[in-house]
Amino acid sequence: MERKVQYDVVGSARKKSFAAVFLLFPLGFFRPVQAASGIEGASFLDIPVGAGPAALGAAYTALATDAYAPTWNPAGLGRLTGNEVAAQHLAYLESMNYEYLSFVHPLDAPQGSVTRRGIGFSMQYLGSGDINRTDINADGTPVNNGDSIGTFSSHFASYNLSYGQTLTEKLAVGLTGKLINAKIDDVGANAYAADLGALYAANENIQLGASLTNMGTPIKFISEGDNLPMAFRVGAAYKPNAHYLVSVEGVYEKNGAANFHSGAEWRPMEAFSLRAGYRTDTLSGLSPLAGLSTGMALHLWGQEFAYAWIPYGDLGDTQYFSMLIRFGARAEARRNLIQYQAIKAHRSSAGRTTEAISTEPEYQQLMQLLSDDDVHAAQAPTTHRSSELRAPS
Image (cartoon, rainbow, N blue to C red; front, side, top):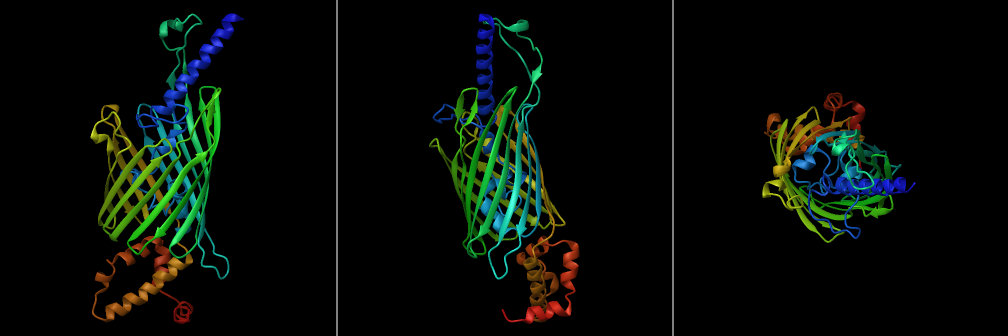
């Protein structure tokens, strides 16, 4: 009986030790953590989701008006133009993989209301893969001479439900609720958290964003709990035209650390873009190269297929693959395109060519929102649609 008790104590210590390593190693980006309990639990929530956001140096809080909004800033759900799905695979360090899946849906506005609303669901999953199992006897000697006695696996996951809406034409707010689940070998833990977000469109080219993330209960393994990686993010994005984008963001963590994220995108043609970014919270103990991120994306028929590469020096590289799929646009987006067709015809009659007008950023953005069928329908408006355009507001 005494040997069994000693073994249980040793086994628990081993599991707790591995839990700390698994929490801190891949997820805190190898930086010192100063939470009250010594480490932060579920720090996998700090790993960027989406190849596009990751390539932009994780400066995405002011840009999240797509299927990444449930994770980056739920206020962006109030700015959706249609149903969207995002999916990601990340080959992380060692044998770990990080997966992401989300679906977002804009809700119809109540009769007579100008409020725009949207909901979203997302899931983040970090898996360790198979890990060799070793153990020690009660007297401290290794079992099987320290060789593997089998394998086990571990994971962290977050299941998120989000809601966002506009309060005014410029301001949107949102909320995400999270169920966080973790399992290390046969030891499990759960936690609950929430994110708050806001987006403000300062003008046609500048958007501001802020979010307060991971406010929740500690995640508890065995008998000790670790705080979640709570942080406040504030950022700004500037898009002077359809070819260039710049985004910056400050991150202020509960443990007192402050970091800076930045990113830029160059889109020389409609179907292709290049991205690069830099962040400071991945630099502790590593070379300056560890703050770099870069990537590219193909934009085909309104869909995005993206890749990002993020180096961590001697620790290795991480590679993102993600896609962002859109399923049509809101009715008002279709009406906007119809209206733009009329404007284009007017400008063309004034001496500007159709080819020149079709390169305008506003026209390109509207075209992106629509499927081919929507575009054809918009370009051949019916008598009813024409009369609708002439109706007084």
